[in-house]
Length: 396
Image (cartoon, rainbow, N blue to C red; front, side):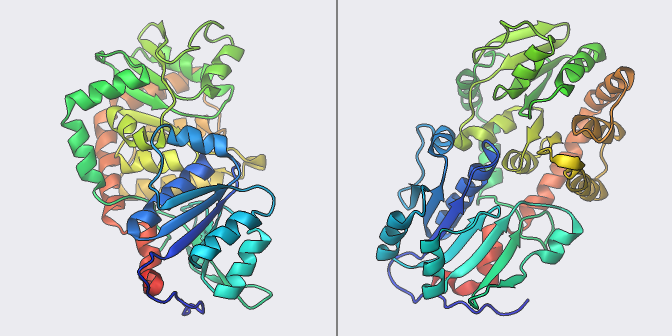
């Protein structure tokens, strides 16, 4: 890769500054990744300014657990000139990151031209070959500055994933602490004592397929508790007439039919999200941040990828599962259900039921595959470590 042309900051007693800019497109994914990136940069030694355009979503993710004082969140309104000037008066940025293709406001562009920080275009993660080929490449701007593409991914040659130090120790400590598990169950509104059933965390986009999946879960005959986060799936079930209109309106409410129990859980703060995954046996997750955290948790998972026009999401979906399956085999029924969930194919009711029955019966083998994949990911350096390895002068 070519050497970088930016001017690294001179060493001072003030921590170097990282500026992040985020416009929220998906409900929680974009700001969720940006907040996690801000935390990791702060953990690595940066003070962080985060500009975002959706304070309500950020506040919901944070709850009563605000970020460290060294992470300053600014509501991105208009050109954000006033808040950018205030940050610039304190310390010029060492790194400026525009997340997911958002354009920098004019005042931030002026700061880039004047102070020549490292400028990154932090894009959505992908396992597609083009993403690894594009990762780390510079893009020469009209004024002569260079902006680098940073594409997160799952291999050593990608931009990596975001995972904090000591992740496994935290997971092991939680799983060895019944009191912490019971407290989390109460917070979520889960029954205090779990029954003998597969416990499935479920966070997906709205869609007509959920009524079909509920029917398949019921027909499969396996004991299954589905923890429904957010309201999109519940609304889909109401609209399809699959559950009564009065069902699952409050956290802690339960609707049961046969061996299947649907449980509405409370909103999960980002700081608690890992522990919720650790508590579950498997997960159905959507978007990007939830998808990555389920992998780091070592959980068997199905990915409800963000749907795009003309099925543009399918190459990304299939590229990931090809990479994961090449490392550790997955149950045969997994691909059929993944494609059914994401509209790559439509199973018959009988095939959907049989696929779910097989998948639940093969959960121990599926768990082993997921834990093997978890180990592979956690042995790799994370995305922020890779930035610092590529540009070692950033921290002064």
